[in-house]
Image 1: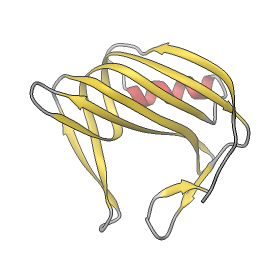
Image 2: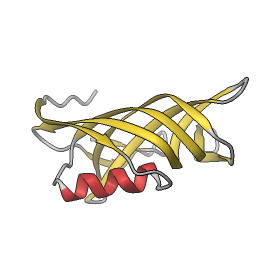
Image 3: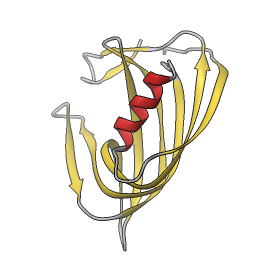
Image 4: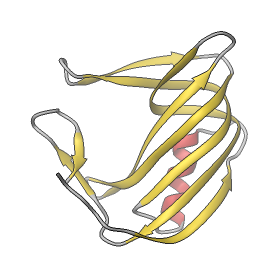
Length: 139
């Protein structure tokens, strides 16, 4: 078990720009503000999205693209480092007319989106490849 102790350093409320990608805007914000470790939560809606799940047997992500508008029912994740770069690890649940999809968020075009970013003070977790799972995990 790996454990990191943190204190809250700064907190931000961010309104993302219409028509731009959630992940790209988040990466830009983190970089501009020197944030390497954080918790992220959000609400809003998207025009398109690409989400996926990790196939544990094949050890790879299976992606699905949605070219229709959806409500963000839940968005949360964390920020750490991967190969020395800022890495947003974000999961999302998207609500459509009569169905719900969720998983790892790869990209999404914003209709309206508000994020809550809590920067953490302390040691920045660095992700490394875990041989057992095939995932890049802390530690």
